[in-house]
Image 1 (tube, helix red, strand yellow):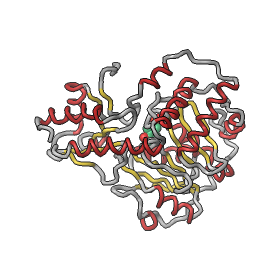
Image 2 (cartoon, protein in one colour):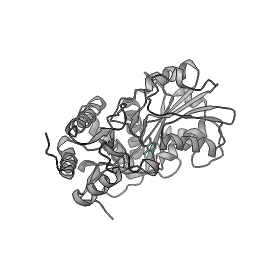
Image 3 (cartoon, helix red, strand yellow):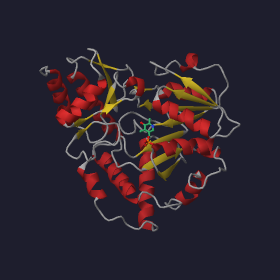
Image 4 (cartoon, rainbow, N blue to C red):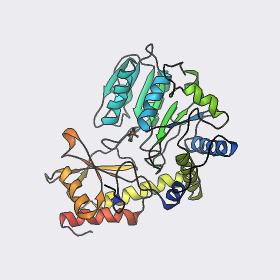
Length: 359
Ligand SMILES: *Cc1c(COP(=O)(O)O)cnc(C)c1O
């Protein structure tokens, strides 16, 4: 089933701009040459700029989905002599726990609920850890953590601070230096609004000193860094998505830069939240990112029924939750090529579904 004529508000893949789609329609060029190296260098420089990376930071480009970035970061940076504090506030936090377990990295499964950890000092288990791992925006419940406070906590306790920023990249503030972040993981199909398949791991100089010799060929970061010196990757990269990334980063700059990109996402998110205030829907958490709004019905309706009705009757795709939350929460992304006008499609559909006029 292809949803080409549907309005999409799913948290990845997200709506792409025509400009980016056009890059994807072209023949994929050969890449072992200086022309493509220049593309890689341009992407790396823009990405580092965008997150205010410290001097000497590097970007590793992996041809894989975001989870590979999460796993590769853990594989390359932690050993069985480390102990990681893994923030687990939902499905993606649980995935980091699985990654640590899979690679036998000692860790604490730090389960949290209804907190953005601005009080991590008091909430964290009283145990010694030398790494702090978090999904900046826990996409399964639409909750944004306090990256600054956690960074101060990591710095004070001499922890390597690994942040999966996949679902807030370019929609919410992200500053490596201000938040003392050592590692950022980003991927193509969320706020960057590109096709899935490209993942970026940004390493601070401090993170680079922790790189291990690992038992993996494809995910060996040292290889990526060596090849990166000449703007290349060890194996065939997602060439077309790299070209789309270059175009997207230029697009962001042309539109006023990252600050403007974040402001736009915030404006659209606030517009959506304001426009559905008269419906029996409540925000699932007070710690909302610009990237997404997770909603819970207040009239006893099933969230899953709403998701299905939007799809079947209005050709609008939002995202259901699974498991125990299936009937309790659904999610609306504001990532990608979003405007108020486009968001009106969903706002109107919701009002029609409830039989309530828009204010
Ligand atoms: C989407 C997402 C990922 C990546 O998932 P993949 O399906 O592997 O691309 C990782 N972390 C978070 C927080 C996400 O939202």
